Image (cartoon, rainbow, N blue to C red; front, side, top):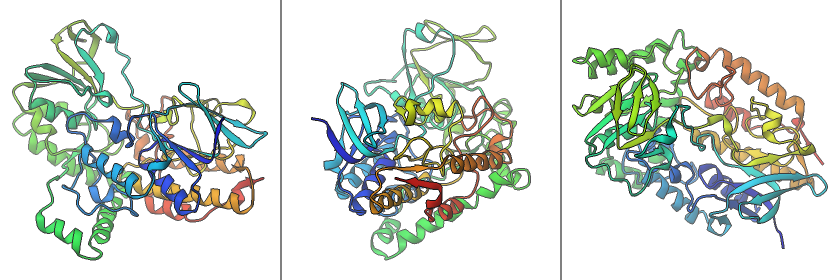
Length: 485
């Protein structure tokens, strides 16, 4: 017998857990959270590479409704964040709703019943009135199109698929990429490996992370002083939010931010003019994701670490051959090459009204009204969808506003005894046009190559305004832009 639910949530990371809690608070208890992995955690379950951690302060990278008072340090590590999410599931009473090892292959909207039919791997089928995709943007590993990848005889893998049994002692390790994952991996790998070759295509702007463990007094204040956590969280929010004008008015305010990163680089590389030149970006700060690290530059100064910028020609059986003919022999090759950020719900297939898939409707240009709803896909909602990513603040702030918005839409449908809620085509297109126009003036479209921008030169990922403006919009439920039936 097919199981039926009022709502199905796909993904048990921050978005899925937060959505489940919101439904429970709204009195909707007939829901399921479907997670493909063996445990909850989303990206923090998948990314277990050495040095994995968050580049948003710990107290800002957690739910406002479930604050953690005992973070061990300013920037939490992957194990601590994963444990926080497990604690949230337990304390918020979501365990009975979660099904692990339940990947959704396909979801089809059945117009006759106004329900979504979800097909799971293995053939199981269940249905739900409402479907929430909480699958995130940084989930599907992106591997580079380098000839010969399949020929390498050593161990090769994407950073999000780090083997638990990998021993790096006395190994020759290559790391392709110098982005957010790579700058966390390289310092840790350098502590064990015999040699490390870091393959860089384009340098990134890096600013100090200023990470450290919290002192005993700070932990005591967080745990015992009323309002301390809320005040500190607010302080962190505004410190990061004040960076937004540098991204918006990057020609006038960006250089002030860039000066900080340039001074940091010049101080670290004052005795290595060769590395200084190789690590200096030729694009405005913010065009690519701004990175935070206290030890990446230091690791590049180690005798057994080499920064390689000549360009990769091919992967060979023994290692990597450069475009100038030199070869680096390796035992381990790590692809720290990011994710398919604009894939959104992939590899899950979403089929809406008229039998058209979400990818077909988007046709390479993803859009969603307020990043959440798509016309011709009734009762379907996205978390961390198109145009909701940030370059300057915490995505948890955005997620909570989206979660509340979706919860209110579902509650409104129930109040009206409607079986279908769908965004109007004109509203979604109008919002998409606004996003496109605003992003044309942003630093993200200033000419560099980054995961923020598609090959067509558009940015379907980022929110072009402040998070405060997003919160202001989302607090109003724009019912005129929806059809209820």
